[in-house]
Length: 112
Length: 109
Image 1: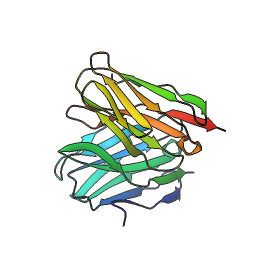
Image 2 (image 1 turned 45 degrees about the horizontal axis):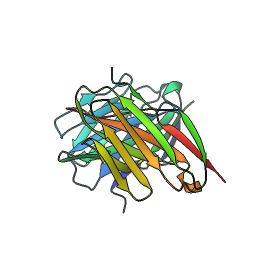
Image 3 (image 1 turned 90 degrees about the vertical axis):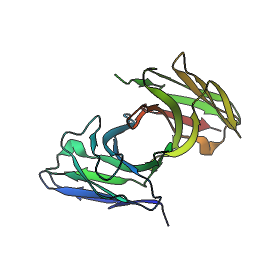
């Protein structure tokens, strides 16, 4: 079984819709992250959480919100999706004693 | 800012050696990661350098100079399967990794 899972893997939605992307991990890591990736732009950090009660904005948090429901779960919401949020979204985890990040398989989101 | 700079694209032939450079701002620096990412897939860990010098891991090596804010990833005996994006990421104190935009490497026969 995968250590970091993301649901859904693909999603097509319409402008103005609310959408939630979910991430779960079985690695027992404290830290979780959400990134988006656009062609030629690398990975841009949206939000990160160092433990259940900790939420921090990243480089591009506008238009997004997150919820850390448990140590193992970190969800990303788009309250009102817009076409320029079309991208590949990755969740990642790391342990506080070792900064290597482990990535989920990604969610490909298309906003029409 | 937290600019991480690396070339956008590189090309090489099978069996060759290629060096991918990365420069970063030295403030708050804890270490430097290299990840490999095939198209449409998740990034996977290649190396992590904290101290100055070269670390070798099979066909891949990574070098770090902390004072110069410089790292490189060296790939030897290139194979077609090495065609991918290579992401340099700075481990910034107190926050998440800061990624560069990635270098797309194309290996031809």
